[in-house]
Image (cartoon, rainbow, N blue to C red):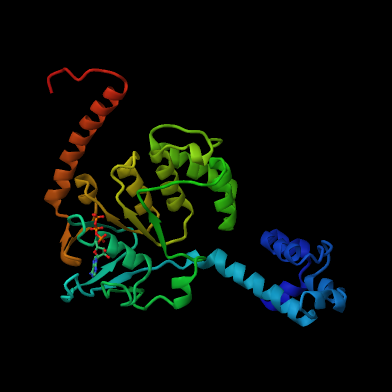
Length: 334
Ligand SMILES: Nc1ncnc2c1ncn2[C@@H]1O[C@H](COP(=O)(O)OP(=O)(O)OP(=O)(O)O)[C@@H](O)[C@H]1O
């Protein structure tokens, strides 16, 4: 929208398209323009002394209003320009030996990161999280669509490129699940926030296995339920094109379904895991040792077939776990 349109349109029309503009007037405590009045006329009617108290004059106030509208517009649509490619340029391992790799990741791809304890899996995820530019211990560099991310995007919390789901999740807010999701949906300026909230809630319940209601305080959710809520929230609401997952296996969520959901939303998923089912669900596996990427394995057809066999085993194990939970005995012939 041009500067002229922003300043000359009746406020009622502007607010219909951009409800957040109300916050500009509220924050400056200048009162609200009448519905038929345009911002330019409203600003012109304000006393110079009133504006001086805010350190502004008429021209500066109009310029601030336009700036605010532009900034919010950019924020709302920032996630609409998806990243088509993430490139990782190798650095060095813990011994300082060069890491001779250049890897490209595309949306909808799941890349697993495997390796022994202390080998550097979390370091790799952290390098992507901070969009390293040779400035972390590994010396790696990350490019977005063949270019280093611009410094503002890298450092600002507003248009986050990376969402992270970590093992330890604790809520400290005194809100119900519905209030929490509504707050997030509104802060992301989505169009139909109530529908989005319902969708995330239904997805979270499906992932968690153990049901909970939207009125449950977030602090009363179990570990698995919190994690399910955050996965659903990330998949449905986060504009971040890259999702990093540090160990999902003990989370008490339907982990295969969680992955499917994130992939469907065209995100690039990188996941550190020790779980064979998850490791074989990826398109590729990065094998880490001594702080460096040692191998890049493409999941073969044979491995996919083996994963299906492992899934059958996993379902049996799950059934036994459920039976034990219900207090049953497992004294049948296995
Ligand atoms: N390329 C590197 N250069 C220098 N230090 C590194 C490098 N890679 C990893 N490290 C350091 O090695 C230590 C262990 O790495 P990290 O925590 O990433 O391992 P991990 O594989 O995630 O371990 P775990 O499975 O136990 O979580 C960290 O202090 C990390 O900063």
